[in-house]
Length: 188
Image (tube, rainbow, N blue to C red):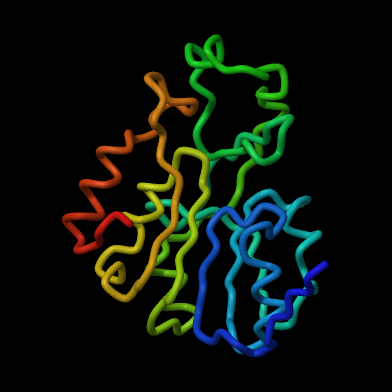
């Protein structure tokens, strides 16, 4: 059996993880690369609390990213990874397999912050990697960067490709790609 070894301290820079959930995408990178600074935003407080203190360079912020600084309703789903600022689109649930786990258990008020506000408050000059998994709010997160979108090098996000979106008001893939193309990004 082969053994794969990674060099610690390899990557440096600043990452932002919007919709960090349990840190599946970025926590390991923080642990393996102390030179990285990763801001992990997760509005579900019970999920975010489990991430706090896992790595000294992994800054957990229990807040949702939205187009306005303030507060918003957050729909906590029975399957917590499907929680969102947007309500579920009831007409799409009939076409989804495994919908029994897709139901809102509660609605709570959470604080919201724009991405440009976050960058200003944390004095982030540039972002090397922005990961967005905001359950239908990904385009809103991008728009919340305002003119600071130019300070972001790489973006990975989800887009809806279903005929009927899972979340009411979620944008289509074409809308998201058009917005990013206009902002100077290319799809890879």
